[in-house]
Image 1 (cartoon, helix red, strand yellow):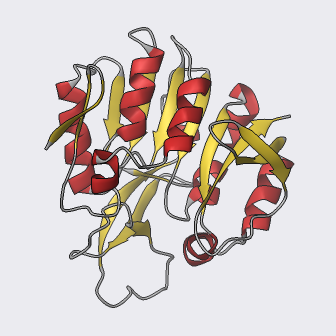
Image 2 (cartoon, helix red, strand yellow):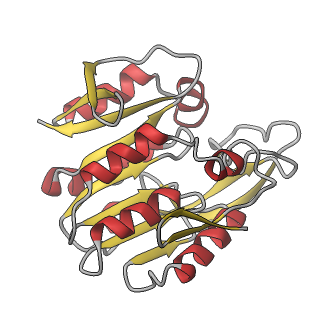
Length: 245
């Protein structure tokens, strides 16, 4: 269905997605993260949405950057990408929102996208580590992978929102030149079990890698920066903001 998420801003939502779609419909999904993104993004900026899902953040950021800015979206899971394409058309954002049906990673190429066909959470697809078996009840298919340093993004990139189910360290390794030259603010998910499964690292190691690139890590408060941290201890998912020093 098509949902007006803000006056004049529309989103295509899959109502079979109980974990994300229904919470978006009810106005309950990642409100602090959305608030932060809206505060951070300015007219005329160029931003990236890695793991764009159906485009909730992308549509808000596209409204914020306006016709002189751009939002480059990367989403490898076809059902989500189809909803995002519909949202782009619904909002007439074809000139400012660019969608690549691809994952982001350390190097460009291909990877196995692992997903559960019968799922109530369309945001759960993840990149499988080479040599690991596909979990029971899941399928895998090959998808393109793009390293952001090798992609013709308009520069500078001011902001990156990244939620790629544990592949965040790999994606940011593939953007080292971009991070060095443009120094974007990065809104990221940290999911300890997915980081271990997909990238083989702990939250502390991920945060340490970003510190080596000159970024400090903050927990996300109510739409604003929370305390600086060097590790994340949670059984679930934590949102953090990497800020250039």
